[in-house]
Amino acid sequence: AMIQISNLQKKFGEKTAVNIDNYLINQGDMLGLVGNNGAGKTTLFRLILDLLQADRGKVTINDIDVCKSEDWKNFTGAFIDDGFLIDYLTPEEYFYFIGKMYGLKKEEVDGRIAPFERFMGQKKFIRNFSAGNKQKIGIISAMLHHPQLLILDEPFNFLDPSSQSIIKQLLKKYNEEHKATVIISSHNLNHTVDVCPRIALLEHGVIIRDIQNENNSAEKELEAYFNVSVEENIEAETNTEEETLTEE
Image (cartoon, rainbow, N blue to C red):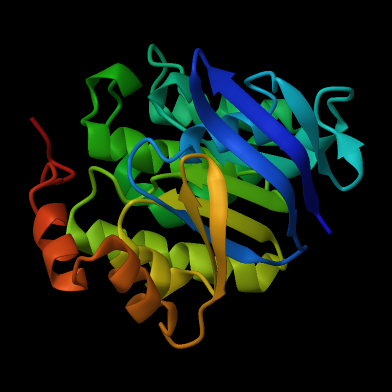
């Protein structure tokens, strides 16, 4: 297994945010973590990425205990929120900075960001971009060094439908081409069942279902659980901030 979660527990005061006995994520899995807001998705990601200390239990990535060594960071890319970005740099400067951390030459970085040229046109600081474009910058930067493990928290937030669709295709293609393990969280069932062949349903920090999703087969089961049709889900989604690249 690429990621092994054992007896993992995290509480905030009285509230148990994560409580997972045993869960394995295999190399090459494309896993969607779904659950209502507050189900513990972000906390779980922060524990996996050693951004938060567990009360007990542990997470290993390729047999490396994340608390005890930094080695897993070389092959891991993640974007949780815009706190990951350096907001007084331009996107281009930020990509070069990330590239340098992973020993990529400037030309290599240029080559890898070329497909996203249209986000790069603006020479302004990251802090002056809209939430949706910060999201795109974060996703691109997480994938820049072609990590074997990619973790993205709510990657479809703040994006307009056409950007959402581009990101979906990008993630599928990345998973296939690099045989990489990709883990995304989303409260949007529609996007998750579109992209992820495996879905973990989180409730109060516990993984209550681990679903194999073939041809969107998980949709019905998840709809029944959330007692909501995907249409309503889309309805709520379209009310997020509309995104254009010629922004405010």
